[in-house]
Structure formats: C-alpha cells, structure tokens
Length: 167
Ligand SMILES: [Cu+2]
Image (cartoon, rainbow, N blue to C red; front, side, top):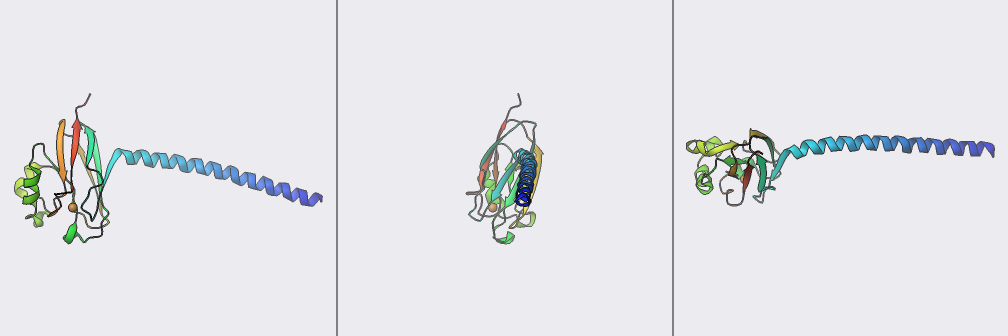
C-alpha cells in the first residue's frame, strides 16, 4: 500500500513537473511568435494569384519612411504564361497606357524601357512560388498607383499606395 501511494505521488509530481515545463516552453513560443508577428507587420505582404488578383490593393505609408513590400506569387501558372510583378508608378502616370506599353516589353520583364521614368519602384517578374522583397524610401506625399505589368494583368491587378505627409 505504501509503495503504491509513493509511486502515485512520484507520478503526480512528475506530471506536475511536465506541466510546469510545458507552460514555460509555451510562453517562450508565444514570445517568439510575437517577435515574428512584429517583424511581419513592418513588411507589407502582397500575394498575387492565378485569378489575377493582388491580396492588397491599397496601403498607406508615411513620407520618408522605409517601406518593405514582399510580393509572393502564390499561383501555379508558369512565369512565361502568367507571371506577376508589382510596379509602383510615379505620381500622375497613366496606368492604362503603361499597361498597354508593357505588353510589348517581354525582353525587359514587361517594364518598357521608354517609360522607365514612370516607374518609381518595381519587383522582378515572379514565377509560381517565388517571392521578392522590394524596399524603398516612401516618396513625397501623394497617391501612387501600382500594377502587375504582365500582359493582360493590369485590368485587375492594380492598386493604390497612399503616401501621407510626415508629421
Ligand atoms: Cu500578374
């Protein structure tokens, strides 16, 4: 009887210890998750898919701020058939005209050389599963359109970056 109860308590103690350790490592995992979350909120993650959609079509940044955009191609379509990029145009650029001109610029990943002055920043053209991190300093306050310049994509793959004036 005595032996039985001793081992019972030993077991109980052991499980309490395990619970204790489990709790501690869960806390550590939480802390790690917080750090990852914080780092992730600094970057603007935009997915591009086979339905010709960007997961984010508007975002705001502050003039002079360091901006990180991570473009992820979550589609399956081969790059030559339906790759994606993200091109931020300078303020006042004609998105429609840019999209049309871009279709003829396969050699330069659909960034037309003669309209380079209308490109504020651009990612590379991405195939399925690829991602690209674009970093830049937010330009003067204003409204900047962005687009995927792969032929035929600019109709739906477009959005607006709003740059707010610094306080
Ligand atoms: Cu696209």
